[in-house]
Amino acid sequence: MRSERDPGARDVEHRGTFSPDSWAAAESRYDALGPTAQAVVREVARAMAFDREEYDERVTSDVVETARQALFAETLAVRVGSREAFDAWQETYSEDVRIAGSDNVERVAWHVSPAAAAAVAATFQNEPDAAVATVRRMAFNRLYRERLTAGYDA
Image 1 (cartoon, rainbow, N blue to C red):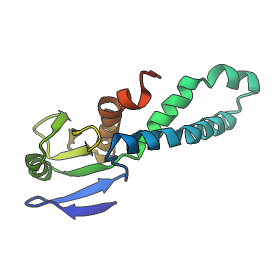
Image 2 (image 1 turned 90 degrees about the horizontal axis):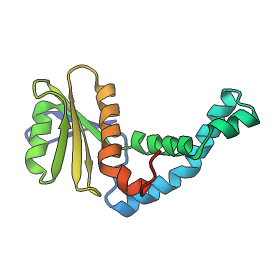
Image 3 (image 1 turned 120 degrees about the horizontal axis):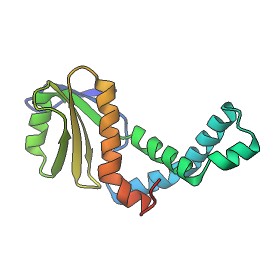
Image 4 (image 1 turned 180 degrees about the horizontal axis):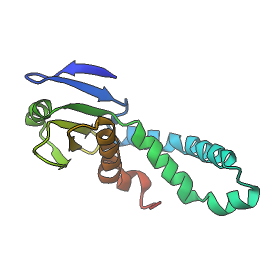
């Protein structure tokens, strides 16, 4: 995690590293995560002592696809900062920003997607980890899902 000074705003913490600057970069990363998702699901099933029959019955392509979506979302870059830092950033951002939560709280977590030319944000008071998780789910579902899954709905 690192902090940066936004002009006229308080420090902003950065979590995660992936902020695709193009759809090609997002698609490449998503495609590359397919084998990783398969390996993770296989190892989880092994740890749960699935026998071959149970594995074949329960580990479907939808399960692997859900794991790939979660892996993609969990690496997305999210900024966490004060409401003032977010407002200062938003004044300089000309694209669409979808915000979930209350206007009456002091903190905001947000993800900027150059590929989608949009951002998502969630306000919070005391739980930054939960806010970051919410923003990552929002980002995947609202900004990336349709394009990356090409109609595949896990």
